[in-house]
Length: 469
Image 1 (cartoon, one colour):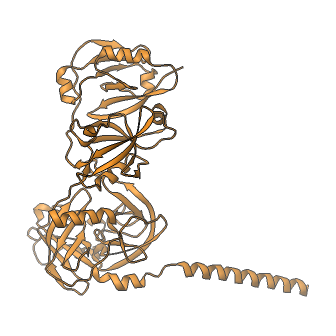
Image 2: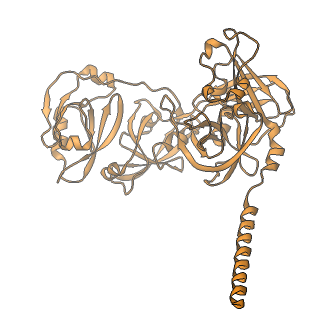
Image 3: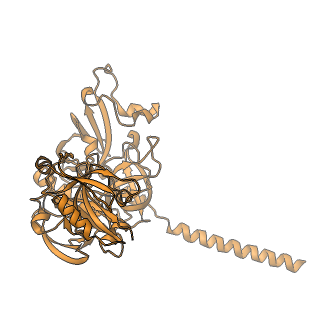
């Protein structure tokens, strides 16, 4: 009995020591953020924005979720409600010792006055040097020199799982520090205009209203991102925050300093993802790349010889896993630069040199079809008509047929073709009229699938036409 007790005690002690060693080892690996805070928090600033009631009738976004005891941070006191100006708050950080400060565009958008408060309580009126709504960044300047400044990371070597630290003024609480890890990289969050030029860093760092525009640090004390957005159902952090990468911020700062505006690389194409079915129809081994669905006739891509139906798999040496990755890469290329584009065309790989243009706004078109001859697309199960000259001009195409009816259960229906779609290409055959449509359909082989290009509600896209055996 004594032997058993001794053995049990020995096993217990051994287990305890092992657990203690493991816990001690784990604790040693946890980061210590104190040095980063001591050395760099003085370069983080609080942005106070004044707006007239007419420009901000609704107050601060999410203000209704702010506890009553904290709302005093978000408005002026002493003036009647009808006369007082609205106060908005955010964060920012100094990027050069002569007074340049970076923050979010949405922090200063529509501001009458912008005030910068330093960590030593000094306050400066700030000039808005320039803004870039597409990246949600703004550059300010204050009249001061020899200021502490932060260094932006030179590259995007940040890894998922890496520790990061944020400093800002959530709900007006100055210089709050929160930490977490990088949850994902290259997140695409299209704007209301469906623009997508920022590969956001996703983190689980606690970011709240007022943190916008503040820095996101790595463990070396470098700024790897600018805190910009949160996903929330309550108005506060739920562990889904997004930051603008330092590579994007550096490009915007450089251009705003020099020109007061930002110009991005532009190809003049409309793109879409390549799913498994489309990949098979285009002869790809796996889904990936950015499929060109449409392009500007006088855009850089068209001038370089790119075509609708090309699948871009690499741009300027950078892989393009999905269509969302292409705008991120193209946007960082200086207009006028010539880059190599690797693509797949007619199931073969090739490389084309493209001179990148400057970003311009694209026209949008709405569908309009005229009366003409019609055709029942027998084996496909749909009726089509030729387009009128007016419709061709309106859509900006040289030919095509409009779908007037789709039979239930047909090849067309199962492939996703809809009434009012305008078909402009089947496999490699351009569709100019009902006659060319008929010839293209007649040459299709049973089984497998082929790409079909169409215009739907003004937007071009490809679908895979699944042919029965």
